[in-house]
Image 1 (cartoon, rainbow, N blue to C red):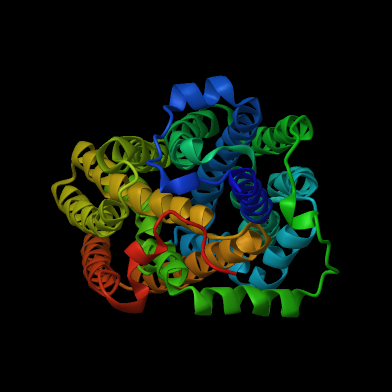
Image 2 (cartoon, one colour):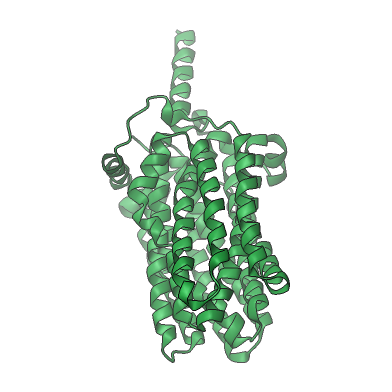
Length: 449
C-alpha cells in the first residue's frame, strides 16, 4: 500500500513538472532561495541566457540615448521625444494577440534567436536618419525594433521557469530585473559618452552587433519546452481568448498583471529625463545618459535588496509592491524639486529612489506570475502583461509629450507623475488585500487549469 502511495506521488510530481516547467514542492515545504552568485555558478543555461540579455540590453541603451539626442537635435521638441517613446512601446500592445500565442505554440529558444537576428538588421536603419525630413524612418525603425522585442520578451519570461528550480526563480527574476537596471545605468551612461565622443552612428552599430552576439549565446542553450509535448496548431485569436479566459478565472494573476500596467499610467515621466538633461540642466547627451543611468541603478538595486527583506512571504511581497509605487511617487516629486533648484546631483538621487521602487514592483509581479501560471499559458499571460504595460506607458508618454508642447513646466509634470504613482499604489494595495483579487490567494502554488 505504501509503495502504491509513493508511485502516485511520483506521478503527480511528474505531471506537475510537465504542466508548469517548475519542479514541484512536495508538502509545500519552505522554499529557500539560492544566492545570485550560487545561481550563476550552478546553472549554466541561465547564465548564458542572462549574458545574452545583458549584451542586447546594453546595445538597446546605446541606441536609446543616441535616438533621443538625435530627435531633440533635429526638432527641439518634447512632443517628438514622446513620439519616439510611443513608437518604441505602443506596438507591443497591438501584438499581444499574436506574440503570446506564438510563444506558447513554437520553440521559444528559436523564437528568441530569430527576433534578435531581425533586430540586428533593423538597428542599422537609424544610420540613415540625418535630417528632420527622415524622422519618419526613425519612427518606423523604432516600431520595427519593438516588434521584435514584443516576441522576444514573452518567450524569455515564459522560458525562465523551465531552466531554473523554484529555489532559483526569485534570484533569476531579480537578476533579469537587475540586467535591465545595469544596462540602463551602464549602457545609457556609456551610450551618452560614445555618442558625444564618436558620433551617434557608432552607438547604432554597437546596438546591431549586440543582437548578433546575443543570438550566438542563445544558440548554445537547450531550453525544455513542456508546452510542445501536446502541440496545437497556431490559431492566434482562439489562443489569445484562452489566455484571457485563464486570467478571468484566476483573478490573483489578473491583479499581478495590473502592476506593470499601473506603473505605466505615470510612465510618461520618462520623457522628462531627456528634457531635464538637455533643457533644464543644459548637459546634452551626457546629461541624458546620467539621468538614465540613475534610473537604471535604482532598478538594479531594488530587486537585489528586496529578496533579502521579504523572502517568499506572499503578504510581504504584496506590501513591497504597493510601497514600491509610493517610492516612485516620492522620488519623482524630489526630481521636480531638483529641476527647480537646477541641481542634477539631487535629480540623480531622486531617480535612484524612484526606480528602486519601480524595480521592486516589476520583479515581484513577474516572479508571482511565473510561479503561478502553467507553462502552456505562460507566453500569453506575459504577452498580456507586457502589452498592457506598454499601452499605458505609451498613452501616458503621448499625454506628457503633448502637455510639454505647451508652456507647462516639466517640474510640474514630474509632480503630477509622482501623484499618479502614489494614488495607484494606494488603490492597488487596498483592493489586493481582500476579496477575489487578494494576492495571498495566489500563494506560491500553481494556479488551477
